[in-house]
Length: 317
Image 1 (cartoon, rainbow, N blue to C red):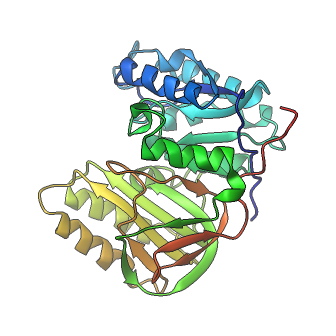
Image 2 (image 1 turned 90 degrees about the vertical axis):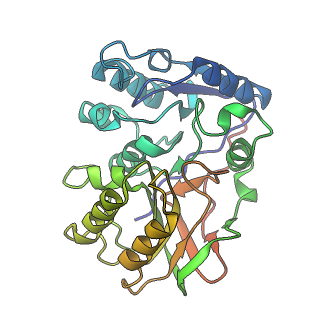
């Protein structure tokens, strides 16, 4: 399946900034992230959910209707060239439950950026709209808020403003668990959210895919359970072409135990597996596109895009 590429961005574009999950932890960080966007010429417009401090439940940014309403407005109004999520946490599954996908013009894709809990939204966008999206830094967390010179921010902006210049991701320091080269559609995200989508109408099977997985703040046995569920979910891994494993942090006192479990859970699939890449939580993060044809070289530690990730920005927008 080929997904539609949203156009990249250019200075002067208006960007919707909202939450589909938990409240922003720090409004100071949000303001700093907004200033970074303005420094490169973008015009962020902050929606109500990015300002909500947990008015209904302390773990949700507003009500389900408010989060869904903000997301629907951002995806349907042509004023917004892109949608940047401000925070992850929990709540995207509740937001997705109320989405009216038929109201969104699938023929007019726009950039959607986020990670962690936003994985559920990115996967839904691929299934329901057929759009490429970006597993990348969020406005009020990670390194994004630290300013326009910060690595995460610069890597994202390079892809957004000059999409033709980003043809490959390289992962120095990564580990080859299973050697080889594979081609497929880039899919995946935070593992807990991938499994939370199983059995829903927004789960995207990994057939013919380069599947990326990362996670944070799970006890080792729980992470093992999640990875085992990915293995056992009926049909999910059938025909997978390759595996990329990102960061797995805040998982107890013995990182080697997590590394060993990941190797054991994925090394017998008969496909190339690359571990230790800098995508995910608690690292200087590269942006990973969801829905692009790519070649994984597990020996060289590279992911080469076979198609341009985003279309060139339109001159008349």
